[in-house]
Structures are given as structure tokens and as C-alpha cells.
Image (cartoon, rainbow, N blue to C red; front, side):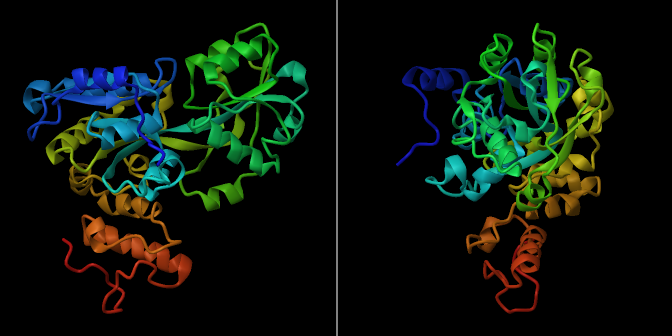
Length: 384
């Protein structure tokens, strides 16, 4: 069987030495947040979350530390394996792990995964060379295009984007499959014509790429209505050109995206998750000033875009500020309505189970998961 969480012996030993027994006891003294490459936005975002929490480390009894990692898939698996307390992950990866899709299809649904809150949009960004003649996504046909490494988030996002233009990446492109750092280098050397990168804006890495010798043009991805309807974790998005004055574009570029989300495990203590959630939300205005990518954040939109059940520690705080019902409705968008795969014990509260039931009833016009035992429309009545 394919192992989703694969580590070399050296790396695994390193993780044991670094993270060791940090989950022992009810309140760990050090809490670790998995991020991504230091060249991306996940790494500073993890640091900014830690900054909010660590101001009260004496009162809370723990402090946060950030780990540079390989990104979403690694973070989810490390959280579930108990090697991280929290991890940043794209909303599509959260959705896939929760339902047992993509990298998790052999392992099945990751029922211990829990959502905490969502953050900024990560925009599917199509970067093309001005001298390539590419002016639309359809113009990629026959061109040299980097779609990302196998298993990476941006690769699947690129494939989804190409489908909106009826392009098959295996047949219609001269394919390049490198990470985004290599893609920019190849781009500036004239060895590829375009590349996809899913990232929050502004991105220092993208900015550096626009400042190279080869002129950059961002390409819009606009025919996405069917994509947004099919995949609830996708959202409309745009690339703000004000952050990239050297690009050829003169106005913002339409695209679609996902949300960066903070995830944890059901095994992480409620008090820890509650504290992290509260410190970020209570200091949101200060947090927003730490990076221009956070400008559009609000308490309301930070409970949207999640698929896994909300961790009870986060749910407790959302209840206190009157947003718990909205968070439950967001969770329901992640319910799998194609098959019978839930039972009442999979939900923490009756409201969560009801939201999932209502969503699936509206789609399928039936009780897909057989949660309504007495057929009165109210499910899982034994739950709090």
C-alpha cells in the first residue's frame, strides 16, 4: 500500500529529536507550527501566528515555534502523526485529506484532522513571458509550461485551471515539472514560456521574478464558474498589480484560488487550540499589519473555507464571538454527499451533523448517511 507519510530514516530521526514528546501532557510547553518554504508566505505567516501567541506565553504556559516544511501535504500528515501541533495547508488539501481523496485515497478519510481557522486567499497565478505571445490561458497550447512537481498543490491547481480552457496537460503542453524556484530560473533563462504558482499576494518571490531581464505578464483565468460549483474549496480571486510594478499588466488580473488554512489534530488539547485561536482573533488588527496579504481578513471570513470539522477549542471561541453557526455551515461544505461515509460519532455536536445532513439533502434529496433514524429531519439527537 502506498504510504502517504513517507520520511527517510534521517529526517524521521530528526523529527523525533526536535519534536520528541511535545504532545505529552495536557498542555505542551512548546507548540510547533508547520509552514512551508521560507521563500513562500506560509513560513512568515506561521511566524506571525506565533508572534501573537508568544506575547502571552507566561499566562498561557506554552510558546509557539515555527518549522520550515515541504508544505500542505507534509503538514497535514505530520499533524495527524503527532509530529506537529498545527500546520498551514491549502483548503483543497484539507478537503482531500478529510474525505480520503488524492494523496489519501489509499489511506482513507483522515477523521482526526480538525480545522482551526482560514486565512488569506492563495491565488492560482499564471506567469507568462511577454515575448512568448501568450495572452490567454488558451495560448498555452504547444508552449513550454511548468505545472509543478508531482504531488504538489500548485500542480493540481494548474491542471484544474487548464481544464477550464479544455487543455490536457499531457497532450497539449510541452511539459515542465519543477518546483517554483526552479521554474523562475528556467523562465528567466528562456527555457520555459510560462509557469503556474499558487501563492498569496504580495509574494516576494513573484516580485523578484518580475524584476528579471525577461518581462512578465500575468494571464487571467476567468472561465471558472463550473470549477467553483464543483469544488467548494475554490474561491474567486485576483492578482493585485500594485504589488508588481515591473509586470506588463496595467490592471488587476482575474483568477481563482484557495484559502490558506490552519489545521490541527483532534488529539491536540482544547485549551491550546482555544488559546491560539483567541490570540490571533483578538489581535486581528495588529496581525493584519504584519503582511499586506492579510489586508482583507475579517473574523467572519476567517471561519469560512474549511472542510474538516472545527476543533472544539476553536469552536468554543467562535461560540463566544457569535460565529459558531457560520463555522458549522462552512464545515458542511466539506461533507461528502456522494457516498455513505459518516456516522453520528464522527461529529462533535448536533449542529455539525445537522449542517452536513442539510447540505446533502439539498444536493441528493435523501439522507445519504442514514443519520436521521426516526425520519423527522433532526439528526444525531444524542450529540450536545
